[in-house]
Image (tube, rainbow, N blue to C red; front, top):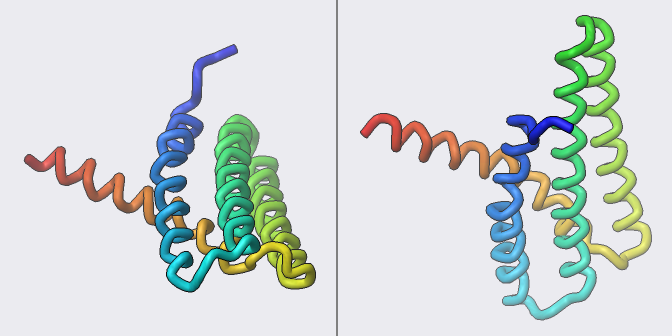
Length: 128
């Protein structure tokens, strides 16, 4: 088997910063008191965003090896699967009440924040 692809390495490098952000955001919610559904929500949200980005990385790797139409189909399928899963997760959270839906949704913003911060600091180091 080949070594890790650059996309998988990028996703792996995002795991720790996203985990820290999850803990910090959950810590902020403790000001309103401890709540098990909120804890479960942040854990589920973090797990889902990690799974989605590994799936996205593998879909991108497959898509670049296919012709244009099949590659577009793979990426479109990836998009719909990820957002259908998020919709189902949020709907289940709202209907049952066992999982805080805000805790599920907030971690979905972490990858963009982490990637933006990485790009800012990498460019900052390169310009010195």
